[in-house]
Image (tube, rainbow, N blue to C red):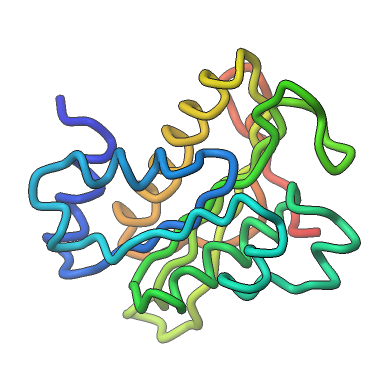
Length: 187
């Protein structure tokens, strides 16, 4: 069985599409996972590790008012990071991670609160505008475990979109701690 990163690269190549990554709490781990796959250069445009909050605004175009009001750990921030990196690096797909790996809470959010986001192209059949999907994770574990599960989760979310051949963009999904997901409307 192939790894999620291998499957992402394979599907991107087959579809003739490209990927860009914006990372915060994962600090480059998503890009490292993608680039560990032979042939990734055929589909991977690059990444931005915007660890500092102001870089999310300066490099990825995240709204300054949103960052001031909500902080960096927010579903809309994740969505804007994915859209921003997609635009900045000229990719078909953008993915993003932001959250709290610990050991301390951040922006009023507890350790283990993570948002992963995907922003994809318009659906070819309908001509609808592109958009994104955000997933909220409530993770347990130490810093390394939270970061690695964030990598796995953002790649899984991207695979959903790639397999559907469209971004499938409506609402936020929250991993509910029982292995399933609850869906809620965008905030």
